[in-house]
Image (cartoon, rainbow, N blue to C red):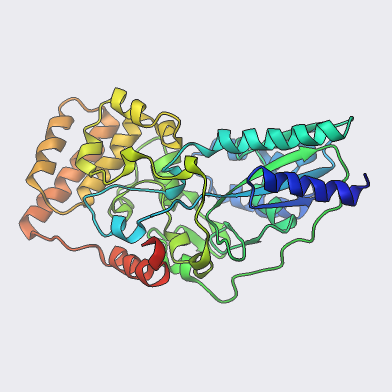
Length: 375
């Protein structure tokens, strides 16, 4: 089998394994090293020290896995059925969880399929050496995906694919095979600035550049300490991640729904009130987040996030009661956020304001108009 036939066979296997797209690129990301260093020098990685520790290794796949001659990139769609974006965002008493985290943790599922792809290649090629990656190691997966023709980089820094939007996971298989590379994707967002203007915290500081320190996904997932007070009111009811930049993106209007059972919303995330989630003890939290990406933040940060959302919720006497009860035995980190939430509730009890924040109301209208199927 020649190289062209082998590449074609690999893509066929990828399709049979459930991947929606597969492309091949060379392991050369040298053109991205300067931008990566500028991003790190600006401190945009925040507390994610692993970003700085690995340095330029992220842009050098052949050093990450010696012997690498080609990178096989794959796409796996995850948009769940009945996403309920607008319904969820419009009710500030309910928790909003980024849609990628509603089902099973994708890391194991995607890695296992990449391993299977590698096994198929090994069964055909005697001298095979490959290693799968699913954003668990220092590698610039998005530039690799663009080089492999899977999609183009949007101004929110995510990869966008025609007809699929950005609701998908990426994975890579670094191999010691010299395969014919695909043509890099040449698409772009044109003059569209929807993601930049709609980001609640202004995290997209310029096209293609995200300051993680301002991003709600970073603040609710990666940040281990206190959420800066300036961002707390802007988080709304988002307790794990944020999808806003994807929700307003015109390319996502035609995104397909995932057929993967593991990516559908789990029962425990159906209509969960913030009050109910805040009252989970640690054992309940661990039980309900088993096999979920959400478990990685731990119970304390879970309560921290929910406390902020409760502070942003309309005034309810029950919220004040529950927060006060938890405050009595809260850690210093959690206590800070409970006290902030209590102050917000107290102010709202005076105003009796039960309206959605203007930015959230605008986002709900955009979803209802642009994504009626998934609203």
